[in-house]
Image 1 (tube, one colour):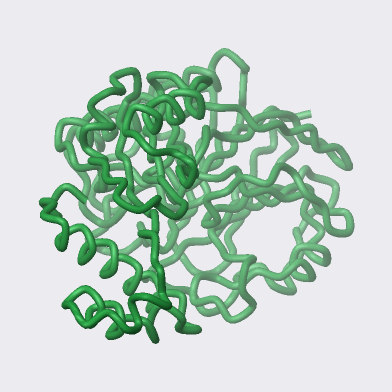
Image 2: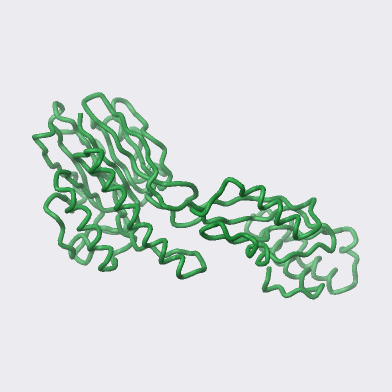
Length: 370
């Protein structure tokens, strides 16, 4: 049995969309901390192989502090072999950090689109891998390839996309995996971890990203750890993220005061703590004459890492009346009516927002607050 760690899609020095620059800088620091925690866990666990399946960096430029931290952490655990398969966000080329940085002796970075093998005789293990050398890779380097020595524990680490057969990011099919003959394939690119899956005799996994970068990557994130042998794959997911992003919808159709909204939000978020970056989406149809300020609601909640309140409600519309209303309000509604009923989701949403802003303006509200 050989103990391994498998992570992917760290995206060091990624930009963040949070509207507070200090918070964004904190998140970059927490990315580094998550990686440090992962290496520390590998030491305590006694892992002998550490697999990084691409997108370690967010692009070809990283800070000196980040580069030094990565190098220092890898060097701090010389008893473990680190293997990196560069992905579409951090391809291997002459100007990439992989080429420019000075790396410890216990790390191997795959540098070619071709499948390459590294032998570890003392572990009876061979590790195979490949690299993106540009921001796309049209073919799967391990398609129709098999390990050279079936008596070894055969591991493959690579960045690729199983979500679309015509992907520009190394399209991988279940058939590719099933006929490969590897004991474990450590993948990266898809940011949602699914646990260990199996096709034929081959186990494989996407661990997901180590830390979420925005509300499109909700929940806690982490890496895989466990043991592999011939015919045996005992890997589990473990959290390493310092924070999580969560989006919660609150229907306020039946509410008539801002205090009621605040109480509804409080109940909906009762189980979330200060490690949460939170987005509240207020939905429903507003009762006639009911107005509120999302920013004043945000100010009532201080127990989160970050909070934003989005007004996604729809104003109450008496369509039959507005169709014949001769005021500017009626004209405004009639201009939007066809778009409000459009088959195009984007067009409907834009019309809904226009109606919301317009109706608020008609009653004298500062629409910047909405």
